[in-house]
Length: 114
Length: 117
Image (cartoon, rainbow over all chains, first blue to last red; front, side, top):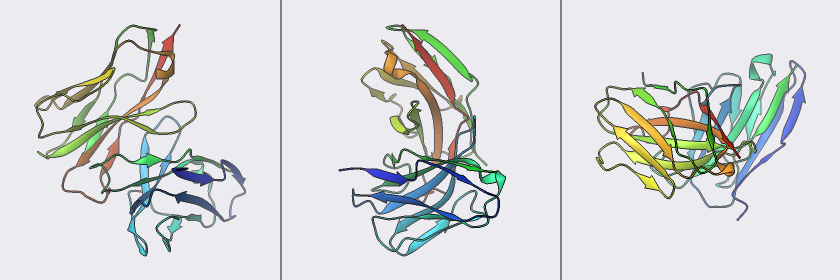
């Protein structure tokens, strides 16, 4: 199994541009999550999904959108990028609701908005 | 709202020695989960150990163990026989048991641990 994969690893965006961060998992996990990690900080939940076709907001959803058309994929869309969205983004998945079992994390995407 | 505090931004330990990382949290909940995650320079997040609040026995995983003091709201991580590969950021995290969908999974700010040869 490849586990959780994320692309790209690095990206630089100009203010106002849009992009999609890709996340895929091959473990048949129902639950998937997007986090952001700002410098020197812990992770904050952006969006999560409990299965294909079902998504919901986390703690910091503003400026982002997600979709979950398949069990495997959970892309994160940034519309009108802003400097405040400069961060490292992690995708994660689990077989159970978050916390009851461990989450598997992807390697992260480092995004810079200038 | 729950908060998680890690009062040691950075720590170092000699290889083969023991180190303890501190974590305190604030909650009015009685049932919850606590976690320690490791983030090495590769930035991958790796679960180190998990503790259910209803269990009085402290969790252990090989060289990693916790000292869970529920009344004091303390959840420290002890790493025995430290290895160079333990060098990483360590995050303490809290989650309410009733919150099944991750809306309240709270991370601390992290402790950067360096294991010195």
